[in-house]
Length: 205
Image (cartoon, rainbow, N blue to C red; front, side):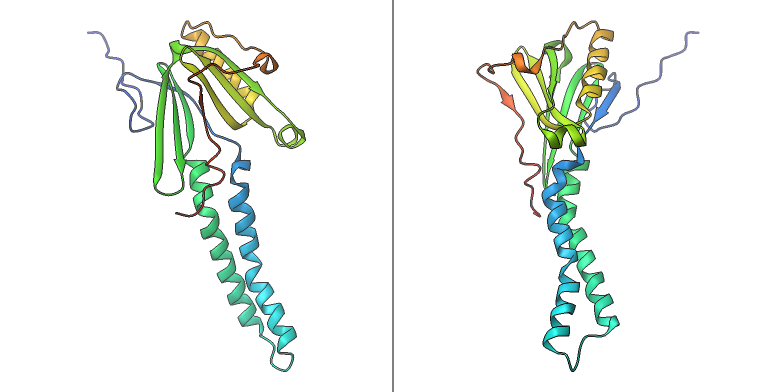
């Protein structure tokens, strides 16, 4: 009796029963920079208050217990302020299966958008690393040229590795998609879908 092939493991809610996940990638953590800056500034609240009270009340300065409590509160506050940005980064993923490319965008605590694109619709996969910061930290912009327009993904971590893996998957699936130099893309066709940068501007909901 022939053995039945086990069903692929399900990694996300909308995965088809016969669909296999081949590759998952995220954006660079740099997209959390605004939340990280705000969170780090919040850590200074307790020490700054303690310092201010020390100078304004020299006869009755705050003790170490007050400093420790204010610092602990500041750290908790900073973590709370960073959490929405972290959620947006961690739960925003790009999934390549043997059938399609899925973009899951999480913005803040209560907004989630999912879009998918059939692998056979992809014509080329390109990337661009522009500027000192992007080169130093290893992130860039990816562009997927498709029959229905272009899909642009900003702040992709290690875009060269992602492009290579993406092309390997497409070729294994019998799809001839080629990389073209990003500089050759002088314009985008009408109907272009470009991913917005709202994720990095996410504020606490």
